[in-house]
Image (cartoon, rainbow, N blue to C red; front, side, top):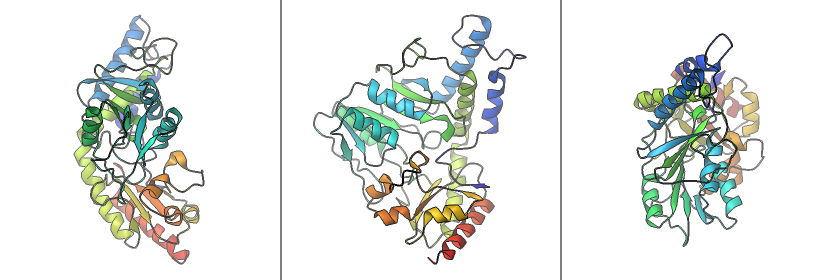
Length: 359
């Protein structure tokens, strides 16, 4: 199988797996202690959690604290609901974890438009009385990189909090500066599934979503998994070291894929983007059939979280595509362990399958 769906999830880095093994905790080890217990085994587990917290913090700005959660969706809900904000503004291409939660809080939600390249204007207006603005760092469907630093400054100048979904950018791009809250996920940066984090600016507090124990600084009750924390931490530390190398690697693969699929049109900006994300369309292609025919290539027709809905992508519609154009689009996710040969082979297979449809 050629795996080209790195926006949906990434393979577990060997270094992250190794970091987790002791803390998975069979009876023959001392790694199964509860990190909230006061005895020696508990203190050892707690120390592993705090090492991981520092490693994850290395991907985020100074002047804040890391709250471990079950993933970015929980982190986003904690930020949006826990902030107490009632009047919200979010970009039109946010992940549904943001959009659906924001609409639940504020039925009159302000949706900030994007241009045809999928970019929010740094001068975008926020409505009067807006209390919280949310714009993602890197879009998960089309890879555009938003001017979140400038938007954060403007939001805070207006008296609004700024939340950034940095799931697709953490460990790849520089930390988001100026935000009040940042959500990230381990399994998007070669860590384990089931854990994420919310970075919270110093001096800002939230109401917890989950009560019943007071763990995670009173913001997220429940027993932490030292194994998941350790894997997240190791993946974060590795991503920080390898960021430039990985950016150069996927940029080269991007060029290979663009050459191999030269007749496909690009969705989103060609310059202001993370080049590990390649979203393309070819009018007339039946993408469902294409994916069915290509059983040995793992790629996507959009966000994994919205797959199976049957609805055209809200992201592609926001950049001006028709329903037919959105449904004729595919997403290739290039990653750390992808090879040039794999990308060339996948593109050749996609081209052959599209040609077999007569388009």
